[in-house]
Image 1 (spheres, helix red, strand yellow):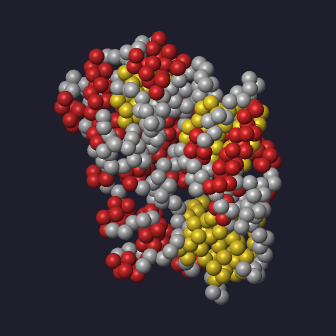
Image 2: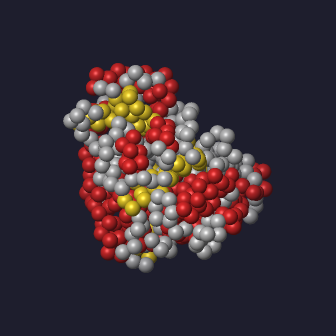
Image 3: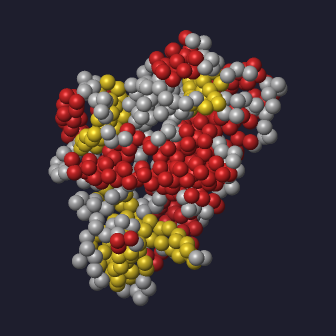
Length: 606
């Protein structure tokens, strides 16, 4: 049985993670989005790879792939060739020896995770790995509202009081200098596994494993938190570890591959890049996920209304990941963790239903707060940074609200929640050209805590009197860093094609690019001079739009579908001529299968 430590203590942490975000393009008629068409691949590049479909080759070129080796690795991920040796993540060997020693001695171990989908998946993965080795680790996930992100002093006191001898962090720990000092002084060894940018001073843990540490020999730096936890599991199950620890009963060879379903979920949900080793891990992780042995994963897929064998990056990004994240945003991440390790089918169904309901409430509350925040920042005008402040906005939602403002208005935004005790917790999101966390570093006189990365931050404002000067200084920094052109928004387009080129054969070629994600976005195409023959609002309240169009005077008519765009694009009528950016997908219903061209943006040209 896994020991559960209830997280009920207080902390001064911000409670806001700085998760990466991939922009969501809102179709807002207030903004004239620029379309940026990728430059065509040179003729000699096409001549070098005559066996590859020309459109697919252009997409590969757009993703920076130039050589046969790069293209082969991208199109044909190979677990044996493309997964790096975990021992290169120094000091992995030291960490493995300490864990094996703890298992052999029967020491009390604790896995300390994070409350988002990446942290919860990583914690479940590491606990599963340790249990497979005969250990019975405890588990601790902090409560976002009262403890915030990472280790905290009160949690450290509780860990010491419970007489744990070894703590393994997942997706956190790299910034917890004082707390790790506290644990190590008390005789509790700490092994940190993390993937966030390290601070200037690395905490004095027994071992710190983070691929972003600059002098790390590991060849890939962008693993998710779950990915780093997997590398530790991979090292624990290695042949070398087996040979040096004959007293430990190891699982069958290849056991670690059954952990890859969690790696896929955590990596996609955390919006990590989908190139290099991440691409290979997720490629195989999706294969495992589609036949997952985990009752909780199966129940979650079922409640999301997805066929298990059809789960892909989109299903994880828009259905599974948000439901797992809803636990930590709306209450406590323990329900998401318990779901992932559930052994009873009824419990799995109940927990999946609970997360589904929490996600529904999260969506409703986020939209309500977003509308309130939007009213505060309107009219946007030429402001380069937006700021909204609300009473008792849930800390788990303010990052989403800031992100919604950034996505819609294409400029940095911060959202601040003020509770009844006067505590002011904020979260920010940014755009290319403005490092919002670096900007906060220039506002130390106004914030008591802050952290994050280029595009996202979390912080605590010292007092109500500091809100306005903080806003003014951030606005000034943003104004000096961003041009008017940078905040008008831009939609990248992979290439221009005729509608006649959109076939099932092309869709099969496009599927070779899966899994999609950061660094490998879903392909976007532009077709020009389309004649509109019919316009039909569809869906609840007619908020979606179906267009029937032709091109070049051909009699063939093609169907386009735009979701939630009726009020956000120019009014279109039969007889209009338009240019359209779209994505190609497959729509399946009642045994039927058709190509679906999803509208990204529309411009009228007549």
